[in-house]
Image 1 (spheres, rainbow, N blue to C red):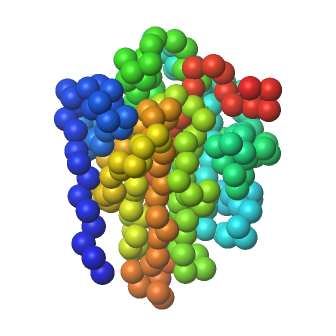
Image 2 (image 1 turned 90 degrees about the vertical axis):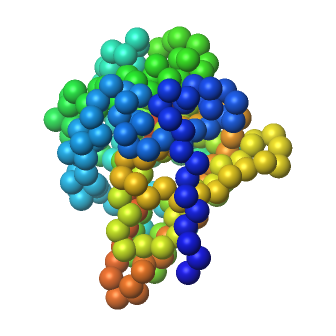
Image 3 (image 1 turned 135 degrees about the vertical axis):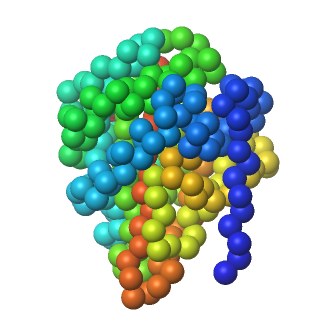
Length: 248
């Protein structure tokens, strides 16, 4: 098995320059915490919540490898407001596999989304998006995912390399347990350049200017075929012009 490529980490003080220059930035857990004004151990307190994610009933490739929840927020000047539960929707332009349908998922627990570190994470990343694109209310969708090796393989991005149809994206690794694969790939949406690396540190993060880059994560397989492994992530999407929906 080939060695995983280490991510090109960016210091918290250089995140905004990296996003403007490259369209993406990779942060260690400490850098993400610094960016959001919290301690990295505050993130770790949530790790057990990935053990309580319902199965995704919408996978159209026939797989049973994805578990998830979904909640929505509006972030204004670092003030985070939870909004009533709503379906997740993407156009087929951005998700050829699952686009064009309303997908209804169970929400995140109230005690999680009311946690001060959670509020700081969403607010800090909202400030980052505003530095990149301009200050405005951000419509945020939060997706805690678990991809398992049930059936022998799990696909973090079954739709392939893609944009999310938003303005700003954070992909946060939470855990890798008993797996190989799961390489992150980021490409210039309008040219040939790109990078590939493997996120391994819990709560390290990839930040993306969604207009400028496309991204994907390669499939995962179990290290031991007799034992199921998994990869846990948190994906946060920020959109200025309302939540995605059939009318948008």
